[in-house]
Image (cartoon, one colour):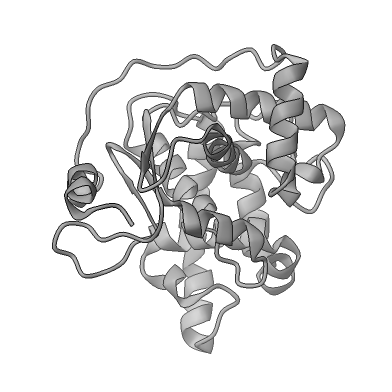
Length: 267
């Protein structure tokens, strides 16, 4: 674990959740056709060692996925707390963001310039609660130990990287100034307005395929739903088909199909 002073230095701003942040310049969406074979082969090996999602893609979509990972990584500054700088780690964290945003045109989450990767679970200042990930206006925070656990364990529908990248995607489209994706924003508004019957059904039956944390608030319902969507899409579709279909629309992808993407050019 990192020593306490360093931890406080890096995490002090986490308590200012969604309460501002510095202005940034808009980042253009890069040309997705420009990538060297060396980058492609290197990234393929690293990502393919952990991401079943990537391994299921056809070859042309793998190249598109890796191109996005490369540009996402290059647009961020990675901070390592309690562990050494590692390019492979940055590639894998970037891949988790691209997985969530793969069906969208604006995928860079351009509000967020800094990503903090911590060795293990952490506390914020005097808070006794342990965190494994968090999104704040100043950056995206992830526990590396739990990142790896999320992608290696498929039985619990828990993936901290997918969860936090889902929060970051929501923040970037409703609270940030730049990088808005019109397809996502429009369909998320429809998604949020359609969750009432789903929540009412859960309350009535007192059970759900989603873990209980999903019902803390609408933002957590969104993030936990996206976790299940990618961790076990067949299970979510079988148990909550309306929710699954709504997520397909808002993210413009269906993880159960080979190509994943539904529309190549979403509005």
